[in-house]
Image (cartoon, rainbow, N blue to C red; front, side, top):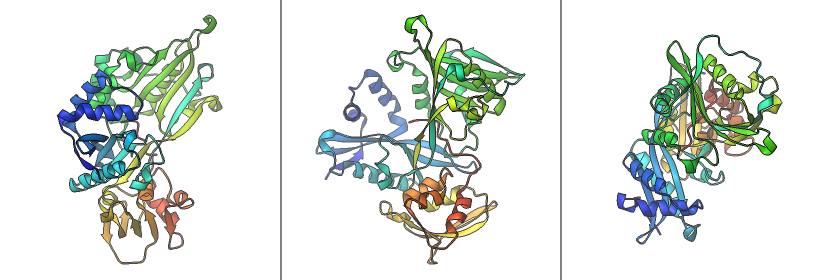
Length: 406
């Protein structure tokens, strides 16, 4: 058996060595510095074989936007790694159990993570809650069907302006978007750090804003990788992030980005599945869309989680929740919802649906329909028509999106 506990500041170096080894790299001075700077705003934990640290993980304190716009506390799980000499011996299970116990004791109803391998986390009750898209587009094929707004203008700004303005613009752009978890102070510092070893052969960041009536209503951060085979330009535009507070700002920024000279191919990551850009393109087939799993969600406290979000329909449903990993969640729950409010109570009544914890997490933000998951596994319809009713109960107006990778 391994001991799982919080690490001390004196153990950070060992923590970094374990995590770096698992991901196939040697720790850098930058990594040591960042880990020390972040230590006071997160919980670093590890599994120990005697006095030797053999597995690592981190819990960040995040704020998660729920359907309807309310904000829930969430533990952002990252830096999960088990040393190769100790795999398949229960260290990861011990870390996951420690996470759930700590978060539940602290009254935090959600845990969230980005999975290095998508086959790992459903057994711990995580469900794939948001999807993201990675785009490739050849620059000559970027003609848009819509014109940029007549008012306002796109302009370059320096890194200091980006540091000062990006958090506010992102917060305004993402109001009400389910699945959004804003960057903490430390994550914003990492975003803007822009060290040469992080550029992968490309330029330092360029920062642009769309300014209207003196107010910044959108921004974009990107790099350019220079490619000139046989003196023919084939530069690669790598767009790190685009945020816009309204449709006009989005149109202005995309007009600028897709029209930059001397670009051969444009790469964009972490876009939402309901992004309107494909509908702006004159030749949408040329946009190669790679759909990927985004944020994985865990309902640490199912009853509290169900009570915190809002619902657009009126209905009453009994859910039989199955949760072997967090047994305090298991049982039959009556969910009474309406646009005016929600009530969550325990019950002995027969269930309309039986649902695994990971499946409930997957439908919670509205990113996947209950009936879709039921066609595969994880949900059993006990009353005819319950699947369609659950589709309506958990539906959201906008697709959930988690644009911040952690």
